[in-house]
Length: 168
Image (cartoon, rainbow, N blue to C red; front, top):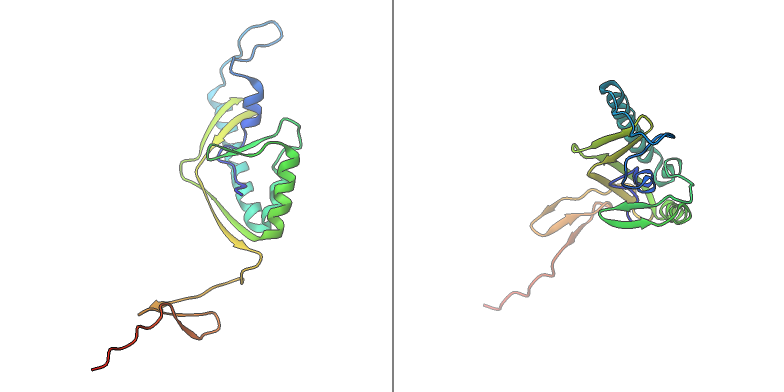
């Protein structure tokens, strides 16, 4: 199950609809100033750094702080619905805390932020994770040469069965 969303803040965008917002008297909103766009961009980049740092340091449980408990919450990744609700996200995180010891999360260099209002933005990015399963050893060293590999215990093990030699 993938936990990291390619788009983190889609819930607000989906619930706001496709039409531009209007104020109480029905006029279209004023475009964001360059300073406001920059401030929103900086805040969302900091948010992304915080998420990656916390998930990497604390493991999957850190996601709880970043997922909304709202009934409108959902999460999609790679074009697929991962969590349809906050309750399904909570169950998914619980499952991950039992199956993964750690996750190292990195956002891609293509991180894109589109400020929509002073309090709302859409963030999209490629990402990568290095996961360690709870049941695997905390480290693994190996070297391969000529079909043999070193194991964590230091013993050598053949990768392929030896073919019988032909008699003379």
